[in-house]
Length: 243
Image 1 (tube, one colour):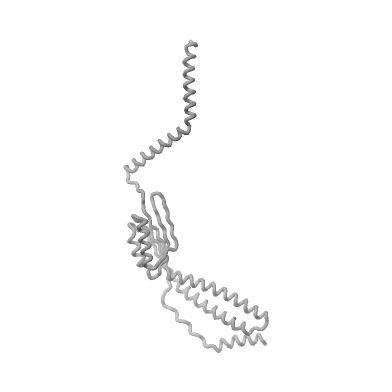
Image 2 (tube, helix red, strand yellow):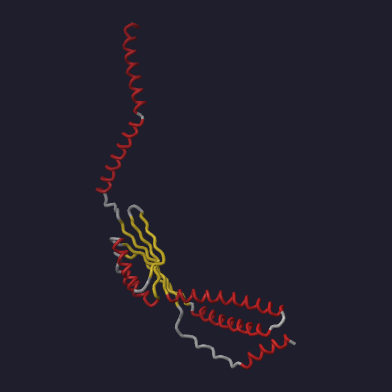
């Protein structure tokens, strides 16, 4: 009797409540923009300050940053999140900071269908959760309560998963990502003169290495010198008597 009452209540709520009109889906496309840009600059420190002023001007922020020193090349890498509406003008100004753009890649992913699908399934699950909670009010037996609460728990887990995915899509659509690599060449081979100077430096370094090695083995050299001297002196004394 109670189960029948629960079913009746559930069905009665569904039939008595006028169907809600589905919300009109926005015609605006949901686009995720990502880009990479690599360029050479005359001064990485100066360029870094200019990039900082630039992304602050366009309300962006740095998500990650790395600095590298390769000896003859100083390289900075930054991942910047930028409001989608500011992405294109930010890229345009960013390109002007380099002396030579080596690589530029912009990709756009349309997630409109997935966005609408997740929103629709999320609404369905929330309606189902509301129905289960309404049924729970009329449950009298413990097993009925436990069964309904178990169903609510399953639906709630699906709702949280969908909400997480929807929030991720919203964030990716709202903020575009640009990975920037800019570098400064600090040492360049200018031809014969550079090689000649480099060779002189290597020769001097080798001479110093040799002298240091000699200092390290000077006791052995001294023993060898004394031994040679004594041997030659002995030979001089022995030679007349042998004749």
